[in-house]
Length: 215
Image (cartoon, rainbow, N blue to C red; front, side, top):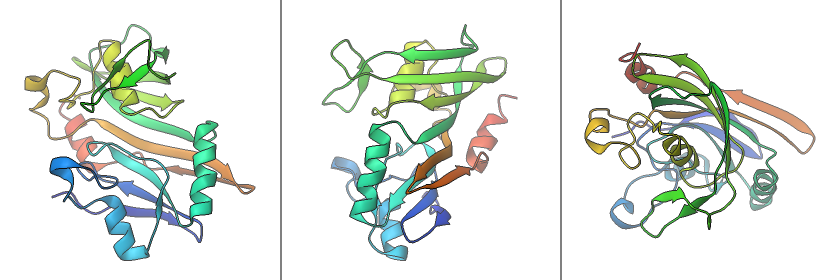
């Protein structure tokens, strides 16, 4: 079972949490409908909250929860206008040709829950920088400029460099060897109601443990 989230920051308007890999952000349907979520845990400990954005179950890292519907709307407007800066650490298979890149490829979500590059999809933009290369993998800092479902996973897969541990877009047999998806949201920055905030939580024990296998 995944551990509980960690509260990174709290005021009267919003919460910042560090969600562990393996924990749903909010309630899902189907076989996952009975699993406890980060939102459930926050509600039990802090009362009602409003989801601002999501992380995939397999992804760890920083998330925003609003404490009022009005604050949720303000954050949602900021996301729409790309006024919230987000950065991720990503370990991918192989070595990208470009050490600094910008991916501009439309993404379409299908009924299966899987997403793909498609001309009929929505505009999707991702910036990345290669931080370190290992024998078979590369560690990237990734900055999504839009917020499509599975955006980072799909964009990096489209370059031929899927995430380590990604059983949906990568090689299933190979990625089953690894206990988690190697993607972590480690940085958030924004200005709301005239006040600037930034949060950085790079280290994640499960991420670091798996990363050490490739050093």
